[in-house]
Image 1 (cartoon, rainbow, N blue to C red):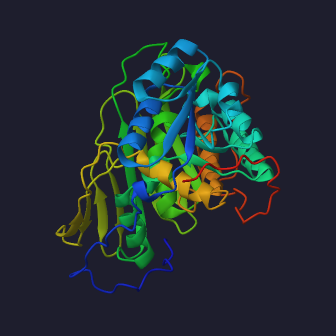
Image 2 (image 1 turned 90 degrees about the horizontal axis):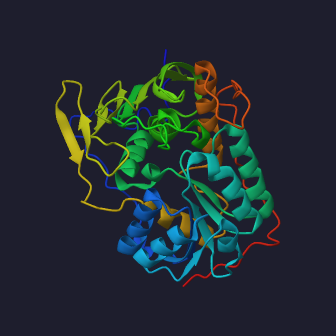
Amino acid sequence: MPQPSQAEGHVQDTANAVLPAPRTPRPRDAPALNWGVMAPGGIAASFVEALRAHTEQRVVAVGSRDLRRARAFADRFGIPAAYGSYAEVLHDQDVDIVYVASPHSGHFEQALAAIEAGRHVLVEKAFTRNADEAERLIAAARERGVFLMEAMWTRFLPHMDVVRQVLETGLLGEVHTVMADHGLPAKPDAGHRLFAPELAGGALLDLGVYPVSFASMVLGPFASVTAVGTKAFTGVDGQVSVVATNAGGAHAVLNTTLFGRTPTTASISGTRARLEIDGPFYAPAAVRLIGPDHEVLDSFVPPRLNGGLCYEAAEAARCAAAGALESELMPLAETLSVMRVLDGIRGDLGITYPGESRPPSTPLGAAPGCAPSTPSSQGVHPLHVL
């Protein structure tokens, strides 16, 4: 049976309960850093658009293996420098922090190069192909003394801070069930990154990481995970369903698919109340507090915002400017724990990517702690903070 949470008892009656206001800082108030972008694709365009619209961050360089693509991207967004290699971005002394926006298969190599160059790094989710790569990146960043974070943008949105506060105060009572899904109808195309094994494609790393990371945020490390899946025509995972438990016996019921549009909602159910998050739950979304008789007790509707990626950039800038090595909202230990969960699921489904061995079924919840460290700052690139 689930064990009482430490927060239980803070709120004894939900009849007059209200949702807290988010404590999320304004992205525009974050210290302005100079950004370099690696891989000018669709997500990179959304990222730069969000920075331009809602922050004081400056994108000063973009790099691609194709110089023409880099120049076109730079022209589109008014970026001063365009390079035909990722190495040139790292040689640009104006770059403080790098955003790695390539397919999953390129995250490790590009992020490691940035770390070794003394740059702070924001790496698109899923963080790497597997937990081994994630662990190596984390060790390298600590050794070098640079900031490193997974770009799990959902964590930094205002409605997720509402969720965190609800959990902290015990408003729901004892949490026993988390449900979340993310599915879309991807057009079958062997050359598209979602279906390409060589790019670490599949539903799990691209879409499924959202519900897995959400459940991890709510329940903490998983104690057990059971998964079933169906492969797509190229051999990557096309659909995965997961039931996970934490040490207290609470359940997470999660699904991801490339085969059709799902509600992409999330809910957290407790002994006194539940939270419902509209779809897509991973983007700015409404949150409702539901009582035991299905009555809506309160709701939070975030302000309309086109460009939610600005929040993750602002968090990275605040942390890097303050000399932090990681974010408290998306700790590296949790990123590693989530990658181990994804490894275990892929291992159970018999899915590997070219260039890697079969992912191990790592004991879940066994990620090492992220105690503050005092690494050498030798070789860390000085920030251009205004």
